[in-house]
Length: 168
Length: 103
Image 1 (cartoon, rainbow over the protein chains, first blue to last red):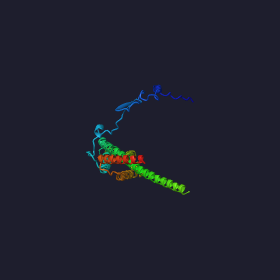
Image 2: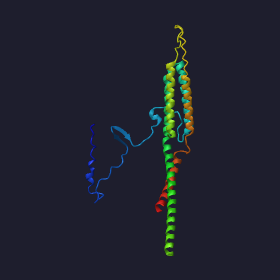
Image 3: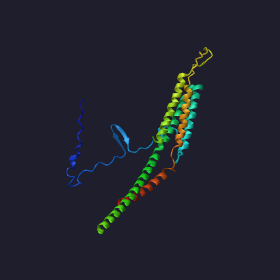
Image 4: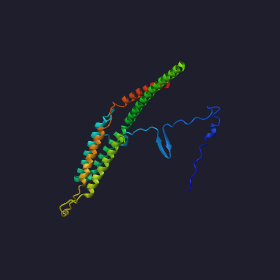
């Protein structure tokens, strides 16, 4: 089995020869990329935004102005989905040539459902952040308490040691 | 798995059950007489229970979805309330960090 050698490290190390003498004469690392960039033949953007439904050409079935009540809308979309499935079954029995519209309706209900769920993700991210920060605050408080306690104990031990030394 | 991923999985499984239901119905349907010129179809009796089971599965999956929606912990009033809480926590964190540093 043929093994390939690793590629050599990039040749930029020569530029940093004088770093120990003059740290400011060497090139800075490149700043982070903004906007869109090309990676392995694909275009990526640095802004991760959920494209709205109108851009995908799907009618939006739930009202959206700020503060959508997610639970209510998810439940009503679920009921509407069930109704559409039943409608499709009926259409297949009675007027089989009109199935395409019903299928379009069902797929748009599914797309709405997924879009709603995806728009919950930023909320989840913020909630996770809040949780992690609360934990961190608690840990720091605990650390402060511990340090205070240990320091008092050390002082007490030192005082006792001095007393015993003086007593001798 | 977190609740939003569970909800997404549930939506996908509802879709899967739906097309299984319709596929089974179309595959196993007995022949039906469309016009009186042709003789009656032979009375073949497909007595499998599968469509009933599948539709029961569909209803169960939809109920599960509703239950999962009920379990969503959406306590906050929205984005601004969360951002305010985050700013407040950040300040508290900073104060305690400085105290820790002093110790």
